[in-house]
Length: 103
Image 1: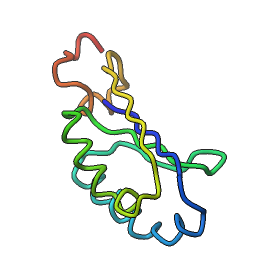
Image 2: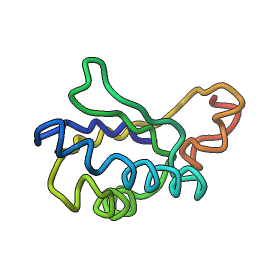
Image 3: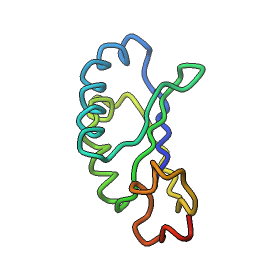
Image 4: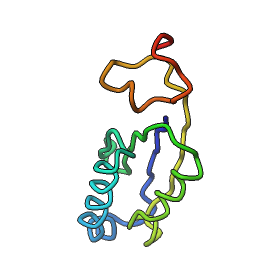
């Protein structure tokens, strides 16, 4: 799984101008099952995305299509981790190599 930390690198009006397109992009990836959770950081200087287990290359390709990335408004920090334990509702999103017994 991944935690993606987005750090805004542009003024707030530039971020706000792309919010609708960014939200549509996030929704597309919720619907595809790529993202588990997302939201603003507090204070509002960026955002966080929790992504399911996938190849890092696939995640990087997904992030490259974010309107924030296309307009060079954010910097991403990708933190990969192996979810050894999850609540049952998240088990399907964890690393497929991790068995249910290990969770």
